[in-house]
Amino acid sequence: DLCMPICNALSLPDLILECSVTVAGVRLPRGMQLVAPKSTALCKATRSKEALLQGLQKMMKLTFTWPEHLEEEPDFMTWWWKCPHCRFPYPVQAPEALTGVSLLRRALPGIEEFIDGPARDLWSLSSLSLPAQKPSEHVLREFNNSFGVAGQAQCSSCGEQLGSIVCVCQLCGLFVCQVCEKQPGPLCCPPGPAEGKAGVSYKRLSGILDGRFDLSPVLDFGSLDRFMTSETPLAVAAAQRLLQRKGGVLEPLKSPYEYYARAALLQVRARRAAEERFQLLQEACVALQDCMAAPGCANNLYSIEGADGKRGDRARPQRSMAKDPRVWYLLGLLLCDLGSFEEARKAYRQALCRLPMYYFSHVVHFNLALLRSRDADAG
Image (cartoon, rainbow, N blue to C red; front, side):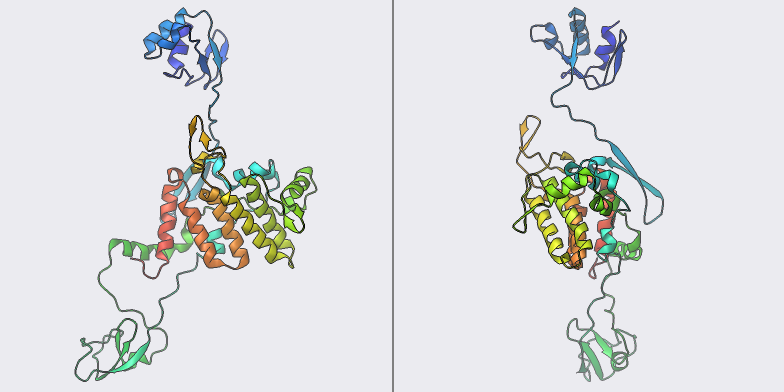
């Protein structure tokens, strides 16, 4: 009777409890592993539940311990976003370790107590919410059509019959009459061949650019102004460790997390120091470059391995923090402060493409479609 609950809860062949059980008043929590000495028959009885039960009944004492390489289950967060198209609630659940606050906490433990305000939206700051630029205007010149050289009988703009003198575009070959050529405003390209389904979908999506999925609560951490003005031991120690200079040059740091935190703190200082703003923002960008070049972190949710290049007992090649979308997102925010909005939009695309599809596939594909719909040649 005592061995049956334990046998049902153990997994084969690693002998780890898949659920918590209570036996003779003793609670065995889920995740503990049964220690099987090599001298016992239990080591050979892990092929079936029946053999395992017989092996347990022969043992006088059962010893449980925690496995050496047990991975902790991450805490999950839920975002109730609304679908930009139908406005129906679309829940997204992902580990808290994927957030920008989690990455910042690795270098500054307890930083979440000093974060204020909403997360910063790189989509809006980099002017991605604005419609795409129209194609360049036509460069028109007069053309003698006395012999019908134009090859068409109607004006491409108004549809009227073409006369002997027409205007032709030097870029695309568009023919228009003299009346349309004198009209103010740019001339649009004539309708081309039938668009595919992708082109039609992109044009429909371009009308809801403001209704994309806002990823800022995941990739950003908010405002650190209160942290920089605080005199708490955490803030003072962080300033001494992350912003220490020698000969006017910032000291090198040990981990990529510290470089990420340095960039975040330098951005806050740049907004408070008008004279040194440009220099501080440049130093923040350099700090993120050092972060990307440093060996990876232990957060395997972004497919980034530890600094030792190992996960468990298997050796794997080292990867850089350049795969982390949170680093690219902060880089885009810094580029917006520098006025490089085109480069900031490229950084947003990099962050979007590096999100784990297992959690954000629908969100990523929708936002990528909106980015594609902004292009003038979509479809």
